[in-house]
View 1: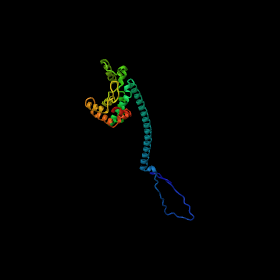
View 2: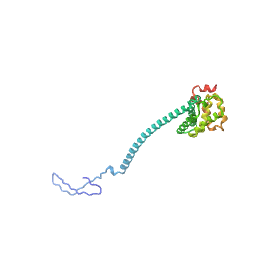
View 3: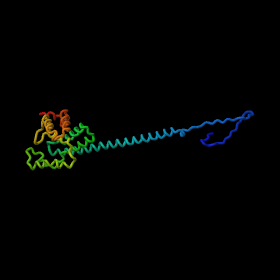
View 4: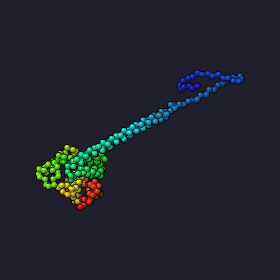
Length: 243
């Protein structure tokens, strides 16, 4: 018989014996019965396990959604990059001397930003801007862009307008200025031949503090000396700019 806590119970019993039996004293022994619910630790453990299950399920849900988000982010990034590269190639296609120029400037720009300790997001952002730094050339007639002879005063005014037309995109960073100038000096143009590596280095140093930011030029010089620019400009770039 079980008697619940804080309750009373009346009971009796019948005893059968083989012989006559006189009862003088009867001892009734009881035992306290414990249940798991009566222990505070049980409830603590139950709550802890429940919380652990909830946290684990929540973690996996967040991880799954985060993976999907990162995948979508990478896909969107690829679409943006492909679109910008296509547009940049379209801009450069107007001038046979500058094909690949915008892409190279973007790569130089991103590498300078990386060496300056910028975050990956900042590196991507500035490279996107660099891809479109010559967008204003769309508004310049090809006969002026590709004219090998000296420009007339009127034609010079038109060619100078490409920076004004390009002002509709975000402001160019000082980094892009250095990267753009390097690629212009290291490439053949209709109005000049590419400069040698020593001439480029001398020009960068000469214009430092005036046209170029000294804190940026030092990274461009590093990239020239460690061969990074040769990898971007093409395997034969080193041979070309040294001749």
